[in-house]
Length: 349
Image 1 (cartoon, rainbow, N blue to C red):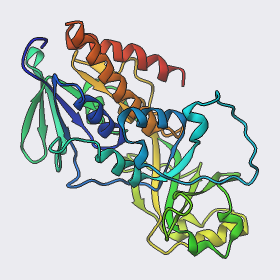
Image 2 (spheres, rainbow, N blue to C red):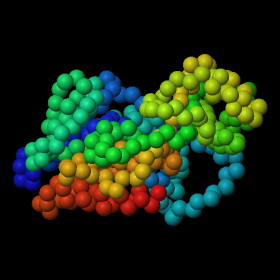
Image 3 (cartoon, helix red, strand yellow):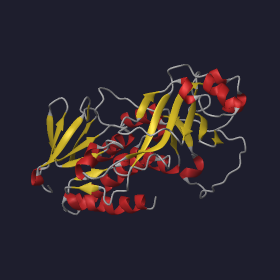
Image 4 (cartoon, one colour):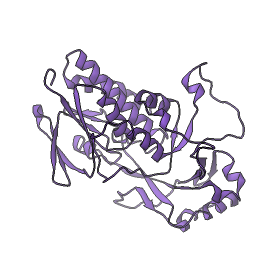
């Protein structure tokens, strides 16, 4: 591919990883980048998202950090981590932000015309030296020199490359909601700080998701994590399923938590069941396909840094492609570099 016109790149998936990868790759003049998103418009499921030191670093590199604001409160004001003086990490701590704010900040940096919506991938085919054929649900097709699988935990790209890799339901589910902070004003112990409340079968996480003073109607996140959800054979749907107040409130809670759960309007809760699978031995395939984010490491959200991992993946892939282009090396060497950097990183987890 070196010396030819433009190398075409197809990114499958428009989450934080896909968007971050698009931003990084679009900065390379020898690439022609297209991002395919299955939804008809930008959509982000979930509630809040945690962003800390590594997230700020990669968002700075992508030029998107200024667009992300969030909240985090402590009532102890005690530091348990010390950063080097004058470091970026010292000036910007960990926050909890609305997922939609991260998405908007990234979307603002993706060049116009790069994203194609309503493009759900059905399957892909290895055309050897002629690239990869992509077939979408709307009966359209595309051929790309490089494919980036940013299509999440239930990745079609991963399933195509590693046909025997299987996911399983972990038994854990998270029930998430964002509510107006004002609706919890009668329970000051709940909203005064970012906190974790632990019980025998799970925990409850509470946090602001808006920077203080940034909006007249700040939102507050309540996440209930259950460790012992019943197993459903063949269960595959897992993301953003409506849950009733009765289901969320059926656990043993401190009375203050019960009051908070009761304050959520019926129909607002969403369930996010967690799935996981064995670690992949490599994150690339066919000498032209790379997996990033949840598609590459089905870790079930155990580290609370999935979006950061995915954006880091995209940035490192871009640097590997830039390096091999400058050295007049084939694309497959860039993917080898990417895999040699990221696979050991994930194996340590």
